[in-house]
Length: 312
Image 1 (cartoon, rainbow, N blue to C red):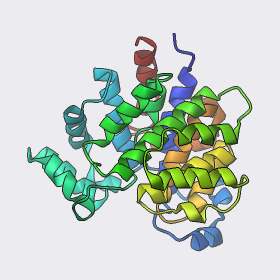
Image 2: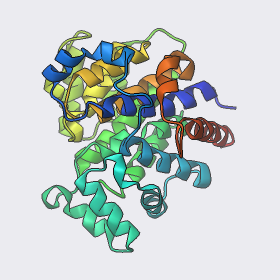
Image 3: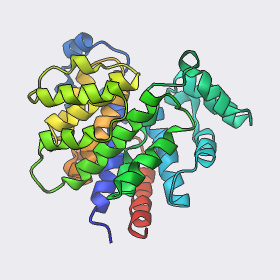
């Protein structure tokens, strides 16, 4: 039986979906505008709409979780097919992801298409990172497997090493956060452990820089845009500075401006892995849409993932 709990599996999945959904209403807005209309902590207290609707971040995460439940590991061709089957264009997919998913759906060489994204270098966006956190809990405590499976989960859409590295780090961060549950959080140790999983110079520098900062210093150096190396560490630090406060974690992510739905999805998933669903504000969870693949569906999906994990 796993030492990780159902509450944590629900926390990582609902933490991602709620952060994504709260942030979606503010996506693309600059930080100063969000501050003047909020600020972000007030936005969390009173979401802009009720119900709140998630974006492609959560929808692609659903495909990853379904793959783990049904196959027990990531198979890139099977996962690619799930992305196409679950695809709903109104969920706010980026142009690159749409091109790849359309190629998958029409039976084209989607791997060749994936290599054309970002001027032919493959995507270095945060799409692989935004959907990977539940995988960190599923394969816990085997970090070698977590890293391998994170790489495989990136493959359908991301072949640039920075995009893949972002996925590695969010998966590892979720696993480390889950491991820390119930104990005082050691920010320095968390970042030092995370550094061991970074394979690109960009992320190695960012983690080393983060280790020099005190909590709650500005995150401007880490970015707020869709590139993985301009968003992943921002989200991780939003968690690391408020590890036991889900609302504060996603509020700070949203307050950064720009790609706020993904920032809050990644930060919310990592925090949810530590505090569990029971540590998330009920009013935010209850705001989440509950139609097709909505809140109830996500509860059930998290339970199935936990049971499958326990049987491994």
